[in-house]
Every structure is written in structure tokens, then in C-alpha cells.
Image (cartoon, rainbow, N blue to C red):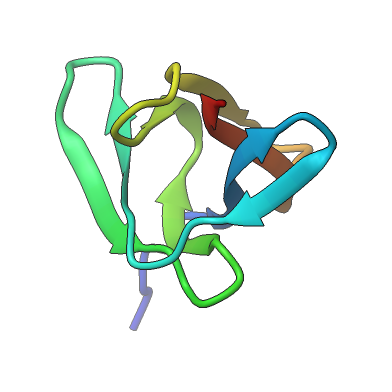
Length: 93
């Protein structure tokens, strides 16, 4: 029996507050991945180190959003299996 499979990827983002040279991870902060039609695909909370993980994201163009930070554009293509090293800066104090 054929089973249709759709490729999905993962996104990892770290959310931090910055004060000069000091960076502080923000915990329990809501982060959303939003598609081109402004639909929120997934919403997760940052962990104790300020990281959020999105699993099962279909290929496409998205933006990551959280309170106090500029939206972060992300494109998942057939060449990217996992998006890591993304940072969102919530506040420069």
C-alpha cells in the first residue's frame, strides 16, 4: 500500500536579551512560526536556555515571531534539513 510522504524539517532558535556584552536567555517566552498567509503554524515556549524547537515544518517561507523582537525570516528548502544558529534579540537595554 503506497503511503504519501512529505518532507519536513526542524528549526532551532535562541531568544536572548542583550545588555552591552551581556546576553541573557529568555525562558518560557512564546515563539511562533508564521507562514506567508499569516497563519501560525506552531507555537512553542523557550526552554531554560532560551531555545525553541520546531519539528515537522514543511518546506516554504516563514517568519519567527515573539514579543519585543523583530520578525526573523526563515526559508526551508530541499537543501536544508535543520535550521540552527538562529538568534532573536528581544531587547537591547
